[in-house]
Amino acid sequence: MAKNTAYRVHVEDVEQSVVDNVNIEDGAMLRTDEYLYMGHNNQNVIVYPQTGGLNLGWARYNDTFYVGSDDTTKLLLADGVEVTLPNNGGTVTRSHPSIDFYNSATNKFVGLNENDVYIATVVFKKSAANANQTHLDFRLVDGDYERIDMSLGFYKGNDETQNQHTMFQYYLDANALANGLTPKVTADGGTAKIWDIIFFIQRTQNAG
Image 1 (cartoon, rainbow, N blue to C red):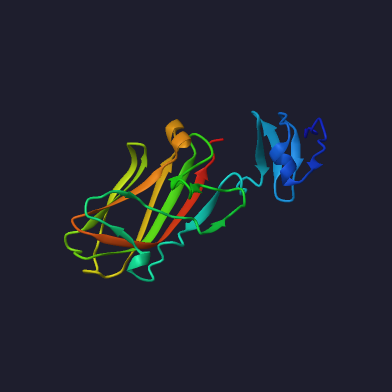
Image 2 (spheres, helix red, strand yellow):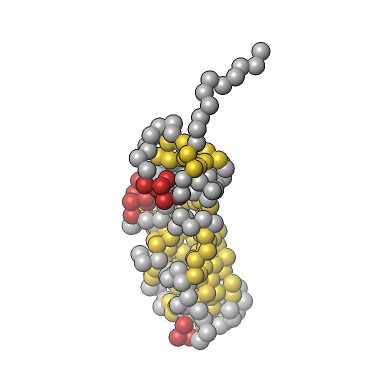
């Protein structure tokens, strides 16, 4: 025999600003034009749609400083000198206005919750004066701890423009959440140039 639910719940229609500032009560429900929220463990959790912009989502950050119009607008890498891979976030596109997975002021990948999982794509153009002997070392670090570490080669010849597309996934432990993650790059074996830098970051698991 089918059983009726015991209660009919009244859901309050509110603006997003109310959701962001309301005193959270477990079980209380709020609805905006985009999402249905329920208070749970001192957070307003999106219960519909399940893959809403505040649960998961993505953001793309385009650097507008190192644009490669000439050598003065390319990032010049000295042999053996590690630098932070810059991105001023001059142009940002997001799946939802609330999403921000990169801090252009600190040049750090950031996140929302401990144990969140992210996929990042790092794109740029590059060239090397001596392509046969030069490669790039790329790493993503929390202080001195390496989260990601890889070598990137040059295959098109000396001073030829080459597109670099690197994709990796990572999670945030307590240290990474507190400190952020910094992308680092080093030219090894010779000098190199980088420009047209893009970070595309997607959260694939919301641990919160």
